Length: 420
Image (tube, rainbow, N blue to C red; front, side):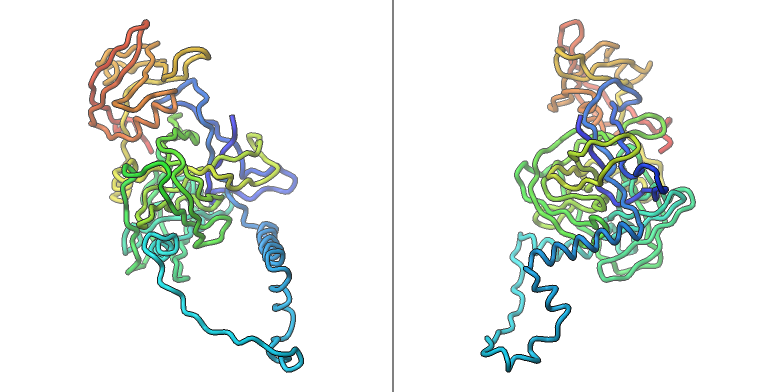
C-alpha cells in the first residue's frame, strides 16, 4: 500500500535533536464500524510542519532560489543595485510604458473564484504541549464560527491555544466548539470578531468527474494560496486512522488533482461558482515512510482528497450548537474478502438487536451494495454508511451461502455509545 498524509500544517510536535522526524508517522487505516480486518486505502494526516528556524529558513531559501532561477537573475539585480532610472542617460534610449489597470475577472474563472472565496478562508496556528503547527479553516458565520479538520486543532484540546489569521491581515484568538474524529471535522470560534465574510456552502452531490475546482489554504504556512484542477473521482473511500474506540475515520472523498499540500488541511475545495463543496483533508504521497519517521516531507503529486460537504454539514451543525456528533451505524464489524473471493465487505460480527441483526445479516455474509452504491471492501462500506444519517432508510444487498439477499432497514445511531 502506498502512504498518504493529512495535508495540514497542523498538529505536530517539534522533533528532539537526534530523533526521527515525528511529523510523518503512518496511520494505518482499517475498516470502521468498530473493528475490521481489511487493509483498504492508507491515507494519513498531512505532515504537520515544524515551526522552527531551520524550517523557515528552508522555505525562504526555496523561494529565493526559485525566484532567481525563474527570472534569470533580474529580480536579484533589482534588489541589489540602484534604480536603473537614475542612470538612464548613460544607457541610451529607453522605451516608454503605459500603465494598465487590471481587467475585471471573468465569471467562472479561477481569478473570480479566488476573489470571492479568499476573504472566507483563514490560517489557523495551533500551539500545544507537543509543539506548534498550522492549518486552514472556512468561515461559516460573520461572528467567527469556523470549520476545519479535527487533526488541525486536536493538539490544542488539552490546554493548548488557537490563533486565527484573516484575509485582511488581522488575527484573533479562538476556542474549540466541537470535534469529531470519525469525520475528521472540527468547529472553532474566533473571539471578539464581527462582520466577517461567510463562505457560500454548495452541494457536493451535484459534482461531476472532470468538473473544475479550486483549493484555497495555507500550504507550508503560505497563507491565501490558490490552486486549481478538476474532480478526478468521486466517492473514493479514504481511511485516515481511527478514534480512541477503534472506529475508523473513513469518508467517501472527492479526489482532485488541484495541488493540496501540508497546511491546506481544513481549507475549502470550491466549485467554479465559489461555493464550498469539500474540506481539503488528505493527500496520497509517493514517499515510503516508517511508523515514526521519514526522510522527507512529501507534497502534492496530484492526488488530494476532500471531505464532501453534504455528508458533514449535519455534524458541523451539531458541533456548532455544542452537541455531541452522531453517526449512522449498521451494527456490524467488517473486514475485506480473502484474495480470490468476490468483492464486498465481509461481516465479522453482528451486534445483537442492531438493525443489521433484525435484517438477517450474519457473520460470513458479504455486503455488496448499499442502495445503488457498489461495495468493494470494508472501507467502501464504512465510507458509504458515513454518508447517511441515523434514521435514514437504506437497501442493503448481500450474499450468504452463495445466495443474494436484500433488505430495507433503518440505520442505527451511535448516540448512546459515542464519546467523540
